[in-house]
Amino acid sequence: MCHYITATLPARADFKAAEAIFKCHGFGFAENDNPNLSSQLEKGDRQFLTAGKYCDCGTSLGSYRVDARPAVSKRELDQLRRKGWSEAKINRWLEEKAAASEKDRRGARPELAGTDRELVRWFAMMDELFQSGAADRVGILLHDYSGSVASEKISLSATETHSLAESTPLVLGELAEDLLCVFTK
Image (cartoon, rainbow, N blue to C red; front, side, top):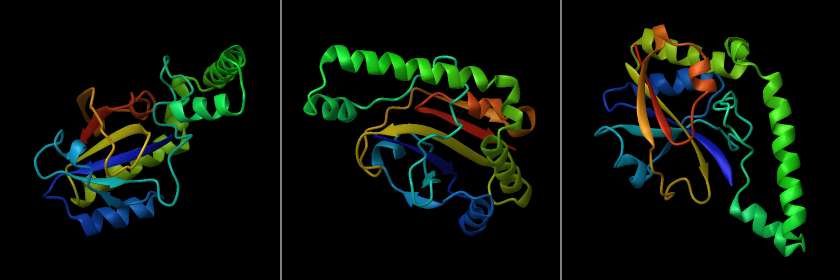
């Protein structure tokens, strides 16, 4: 249905300072308490949706993955079927959508990830979080929600830890869905 990015912060973080930093960089900071996700995080970690008023559909996070394909939800397919679309027409539409997405992806070369404004903004925000002492660790999760953000069943595929100082924005550009990418000082 919609992509949302969730940031996770440790219990010892300064949440007021973190909120100010997130907002200064143009991100939202709405606390979310998804029990399913909480059970897969470090004890005491808190979750924050970073979208602001809207969803994160069209985000640069994950857009540099070679295997990234345009997301089509079951709901979207069901709507097309209710409109009377045949399976052949739906398949043609999916092929056209994939071809257009591939064309866009060819224009978004990985070596340009360091100039992608959104990815650079994420890195600047995390750097400020760490420099200010508001947090010493932040997790980033991209998930395509099919229901409520508070009750969605999320199954993390893995958790990767990266030192922010030794990483580049391409790490976020190649972020896989449902992979918790944790950055440290």
